[in-house]
Image 1 (tube, one colour):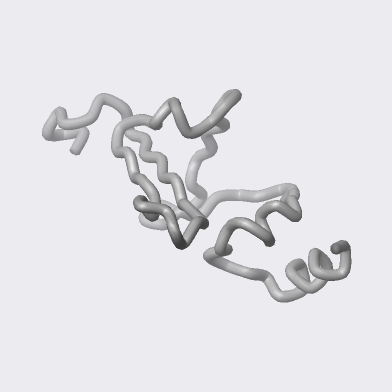
Image 2 (cartoon, rainbow, N blue to C red):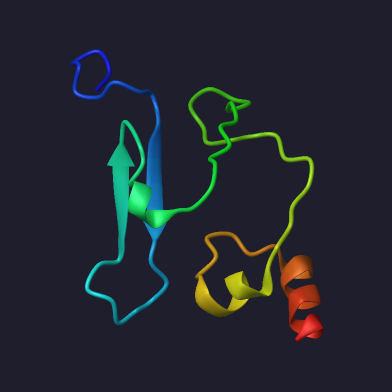
Length: 87
């Protein structure tokens, strides 16, 4: 897309809608972000292995909101059990 000059930035963003009753399930934007879906600053990090969405993660902070309102793509079992005990 960059080589065809369809987008100016080598970035993409996506929104996952956790509401099963919503009209739209989500949104993906190539070449930028939809400014109405976030507040604050974005943090850009490099991938650690070309061809994958693999990134280095030093610290993970999970909020209980995630467990209640967002379907997790990957659910590490030990972390999910700890979150359930916090309720």
